Image 1 (tube, one colour):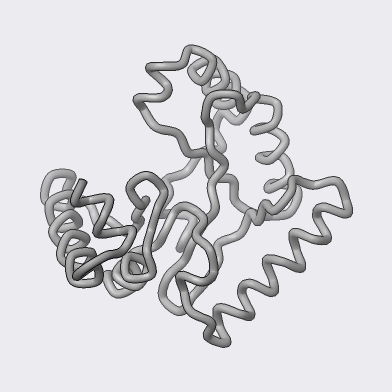
Image 2 (image 1 turned 30 degrees about the horizontal axis):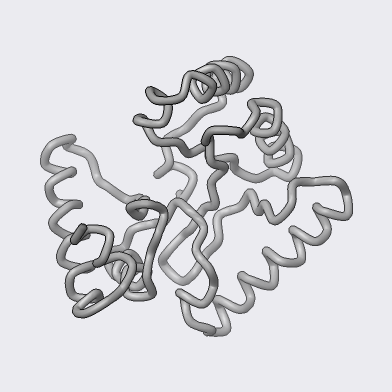
Length: 178
């Protein structure tokens, strides 16, 4: 799959990633008539070249990627330190393991970690993360794939439960980066 390879790395990855991001963004903007500001990598995978292409395109990123993809600049290290310190404190206080409910800032790029709604994840666990994010003054992002919702009735039930419990508290992904 070309799309998967260009965002995971390989020959010409940077060039392919930038070209595909720009073309995809233009297409989506022309179809929907809105500015596209957020990128979710295919299969939740992103190479260093893909990460830099997202940043160069002026997009924000939904999904967690290892710090090694960003390089070790002072801004990246400071952001990583804030995340690590927060997660350690939250864990000591009974919060979710390695969950940082704030936008990570890397120059012009914002990144938000998401909670995946996948088979085997209970609605109560998702709601606990959402409540934790709210208490911390952060943002909760729920991510799933439409095909998984269709293929797994338990995901649809969990999604129904979560959306009912969090009714009226949803915003667009782009708005969390403002």
